[in-house]
Length: 253
Ligand code: FPP
Image 1 (cartoon, rainbow, N blue to C red):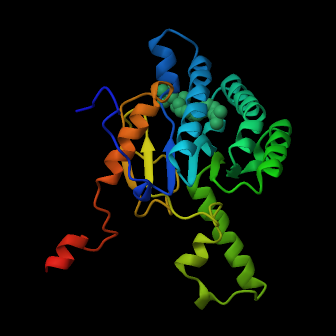
Image 2: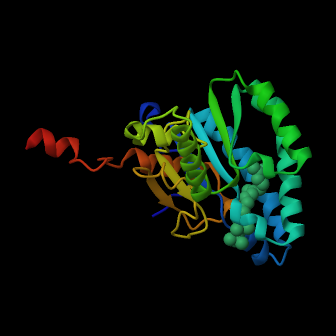
Image 3: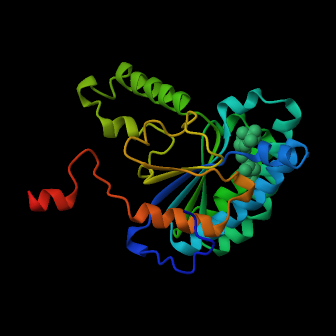
């Protein structure tokens, strides 16, 4: 049962997820429940992004990946896509100084080249400004789709084989990982999905092989720091076995 307060929760800084990824879902339903336009849900969702980025940095998360726009989202109504791009641009500009001051590096995974040129420009400015920051990476998944990412990796690997820069025998799991958008980033330890949907929606499919998954019914605009801490506490009590037996069993047996 959910407690009303996180006052009793003490997180162990050594057992935090290094890489935390979030599928931010439910903006549209949040707005619909209030008889508002879907865009209002995205606006409120942007506020949640601000508070969760701050909380993640304060808590000591190493990498925070947010699924902000998928390759499939291009098929949404033109006005909604336009509004999402505007919110994104606003966020990148308004948070620039704060990211910088808090030593957070902005990184993008996905088809950055498909974003409107003005959004790309603001992203480039913020990425350049924050490139040496080393306390946390804010990794925004934009025009991101895992199948496209893997297809892209396969194409790069085939090209290297054709140009004799790579031997087929040298293809390994590490080599494939190193051709993904996430190449310099360890796989996510924990993936949170809001709004009660039980699917990955083309998000980090290769990287999620051993990620812990937490689904909450909360709609993204309502997602709070308190619930975030509760989820991290739940993660700290999980037994991650990576396909092996648990430490306690192997010691006893
Ligand atoms: C899913 O809700 C959410 C998105 C497709 C976009 C996420 C965008 C934001 C949180 C705001 C802008 C982002 C940043 C980084 C400032 P949905 O529309 O699919 O909700 P529904 O399933 O209830 O319809």
